[in-house]
Image 1 (cartoon, one colour):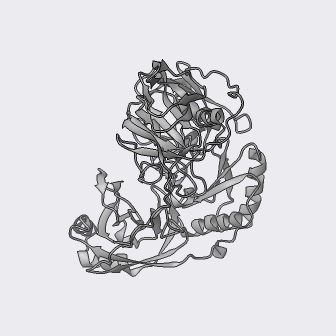
Image 2 (cartoon, helix red, strand yellow; image 1 turned 180 degrees about the vertical axis):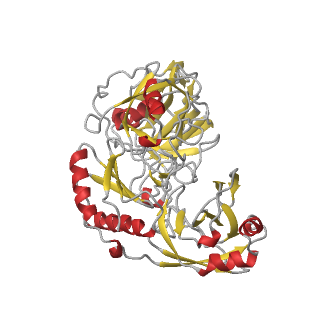
Image 3 (cartoon, one colour; image 1 turned 45 degrees about the vertical axis):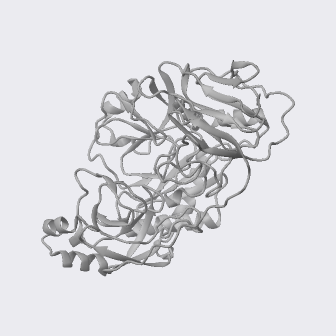
Length: 533
């Protein structure tokens, strides 16, 4: 029997339906049962759901449904879930070459467990594993339960790079790294299967609920080629002369794939992106360039209109007839072929948005043109822009008769006040630390990026263990890892996490974080209730 489920607020735009607190196949069956029920009959305002080990994260539109309404409806749905009704997924076979350079941790794991390497391989390949959840990165499936005889703690020091296809174990779970990435699991083998292909349908080879078996093999089949993304022959309109510190193609982000470990990506300051597009008559979700701290230099290859919003990075348009001309903020500007746009220095803020009439036209993947830097797909070749890159734009729309009115953007306060909804795991902090979390200012660490706004301040103490059973996260979730320094998850942040999430930034304040400068700015948190948020 499972405990009575509970529904906890995760900020103002998500809730977590928790069936328990442990890694348990029965609890996971409940999660998948509710997930399947919501797929068949979504609740009002539902955007998507993210199944994890023992909880289902449901993201919703707060303008459509109130927290109390979605809470009550999900409690009703969860109470009707029968664990045995969670249908198993498809069978999957994973050819695996164990040991040697493919499994550098196999010998050490065997010695630790008092087994031979052959016994470890036999035990690992003898069972059928259920894909409890996907997270950490696109296509990474958490598979369980590992035989108790193979239960092994994570590495004390995670590797900087784990090769793609690595088969690894940690605790009572096993998994396969879809792409090369840092990782702390024990690598015992490798497969050549491609676990994630953003242009395929479905993009993940293993889905929640699938049943997976590993097959020991000395030879591995050649991996299938990646599915080529759609292409077009539109002429280039922009040429990158200098890339700036970090310039990427971003739109409103991709929705509907967090259950597969795919982050939303997209513009960190969504209102600034919408404002730039509105100035040009573009679709509000059209792709633009997100320019970080030090903007790029680019040449217009055709006459077009553009607009710059967000941070003030001192844009200057070089025209042959007028010389260098400062570009006014939040205005529609005509650039002629041969004109060069530069950013001469930051005055305030962190991220500016450069939109062009028609929107940046790169192949859409999973419904978005945004760049996912961590997973290396979307945008322009899945990476930041470089000198020599050329970008096409879509069909320019009819321009609005006048520039739409919009309040002048102001620089963030010092320190910025950021509203949060406490939970879902604020009880994992000791009471004094929770008070400190809401009372002390935090500096924005220089290590901050699009994944997370890392904070530096008085360390927060956990009541017990600093890790939890991994569950879903949304942009704005604030994790507290063992070092006690909070991290606010941003658009490129992982979809699940194993550290306590003590609070979530309300949706209206997330853009403010996008404009805080790492190593310069500070912020302070203030708690509000879900209804107020």
